[in-house]
Length: 111
Image 1 (cartoon, rainbow, N blue to C red):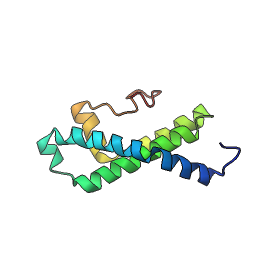
Image 2: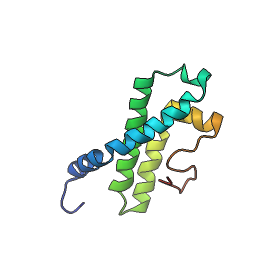
Image 3: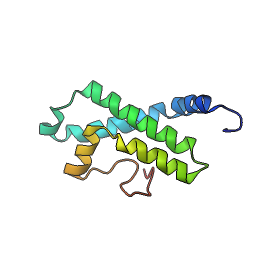
Image 4: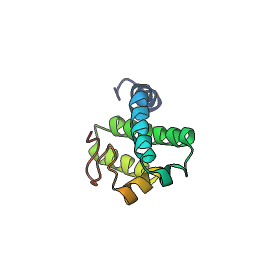
C-alpha cells in the first residue's frame, strides 16, 4: 500500500478501517473504569471515551502504517504511549489493568 498511496491517504484508509476497533477498545476501557465508583466519578464519560478512542486509533494506525519497519513501528507506538490518556495511566498503575497492547516494552496488540 505504501507504494500506491501517499502517507496521508494511507493514514486515512487505516483510520477508516480501525475506527470501530478503536471505539470498541475505548468502550472496554470505560467499562473497566466504571468498575471503580470512586474513580469513575472523576471523568466525564463522553469526553473520556472520545479521548480513549483517539488514543487507540492513533496507536492502531501507527502500528499498521509502519508494519514494514519494526523499529519505526516501535518508535511511533512508544511516542503515542507517552501521550496515553490519564484515565488509562491510572487504571494501569492503580488497578493493574492490562491494555489491549500488552504491558511489555516489545509487546503490541495482544488481544
